Amino acid sequence: MRFVALKSEQQLDMQTLHRARDRAVGERTSLMNQLRAVLLERGVIVPQGRAKLRRWQALDEWIAGFDGEFAAELKRDEAARRLTSIPGVGALNATALVAAIGDAQTFARGRDLAAWLGLVPRQATTGGKPRLLGITKRGSKYLRKMLIQGARAALPTLSRSNTRLGQWLRGLLARAHSNTVVVALAAKMARTVWALLRYGTTFEPRAIAI
Image (cartoon, rainbow, N blue to C red; front, side, top):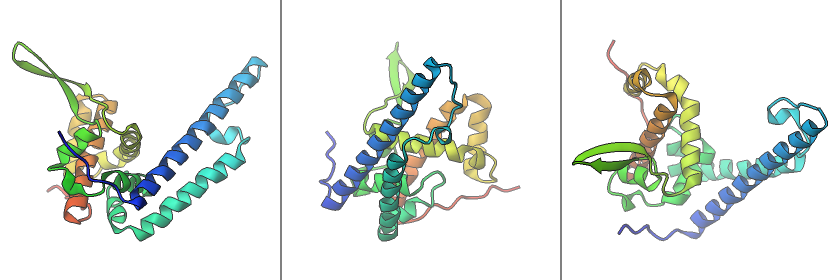
């Protein structure tokens, strides 16, 4: 059985802020969908995109306030700043990860953190032959969502880069669906997060020989 270290009051406060922001974003999305449905019943079709329906300025301002809190925390927290050196990890992801993980020494290796976040494949063994299935989706749905969104945003740039990571991504894209590659990149990001928190380093992409 794996035990996670007790969280400090600062970590708990940061997690509370993230939960509140996530709830506000969900409420805003729900309002958008509801308003579109009401307008559609009256024959009015509204294009996709939040900018097309400016009816919830208060929610936008509330969410922006949370983002300001996370940006301020990033200036105070050296560990969170180091995580933003990872492509696809910004203030939102970094502060959420530091608040949830705390002491990286709780995990013996990066794969353990990826497994804790539900980003590793499930295994099914038949006749002694293991078969990899989809990811387990265990652990925090919020953190997993944040990493996958960050990976999706960073994938186009990283896959074109002249780095070992870019080379690895191009090889995956040649034989797997882009969604599978996004999740694989998110799992690699989780391992990188563990390494940076454990050893106090920053992410430095390594170029490949031409």
